[in-house]
Amino acid sequence: MQFELTEALIDDILFSMEDQNGEFILDTREGVLVFENTREYEEAAETDDDEGRFIGLPYWGPSEGYRLMEKFAVAFKNTVIRKKLTAALDQGKGVFRAFKDVLSSHPEAEQLWFVFKEREMRQVILDWYNAYREEWGLALLGNEPEETEDLVLEDFRFRPPEQKDTEAIGKLRQSCFAELLSAAEDEGLGDRPPFVAGWVQHLGPAEPLLVAESGSGEFAGYAAAVIREDTLCVTALEVRPEYRGLGLGEMILARLLETEPVKKAAHVVVELPQTAESFSRVLLRRSFVPFTTSYVLKSK
Image (tube, rainbow, N blue to C red):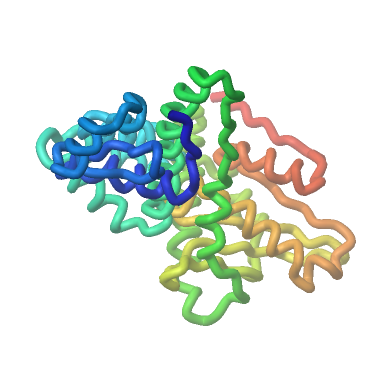
């Protein structure tokens, strides 16, 4: 029997898929879920001539749940959180609890997980329903993509810097400088090449212009700049490691471009170290154009 896959029915099926204690089936005539192996169901099944009235739901067990967590973990953009998630999945016993514990300590990642899980499980339901639509000779239904990162970014707040941010900005600056030194060493340029320190000093002293904080009020990142005549040079746009991979850096840049110092400047310049080269795509989307590129050769 044909039935309509309503939003209410999808919500009920989602709930039943995660309920490992109950065996549900769909009453296609009424459009509701019922418990299998109940007297009401058995009586209806015996007296009803419609063999297609009751159908099974998409199967969802622990193995499917584990594969979903694994898919989320390996594709997670933030390296710090990805390593924690994959380590939780590799520990053997108690992986579900360990996975949830990692997410609970990173609210933004946890929110992404909830959105990801619902989207993936809804796709399972849609595939199940489309299989029936194909039997009925009806067109298959498509699925609307969801911008999960936008949902997470809504929780961040952007504000002018305050005195309390000084220590957090300093620690993040030192951490990013250490990453730059590590990258230089990886490229065979030595463990502390003088030109790296000189490059950083060349960019400063800078004045923080914008701070990003999480929904819980934690310092998440900042942007700083130096004004030289009619040009504003963005000398730092840094995000704490646990908040990377969410699009926060691009959002900081977008909000920075709306500030008064930027509006007064004739030009805005952003100098990228090699470690942040991927951010060039963000700049291009914001109508920046490449101007100079530096190359380094270790001659001895």
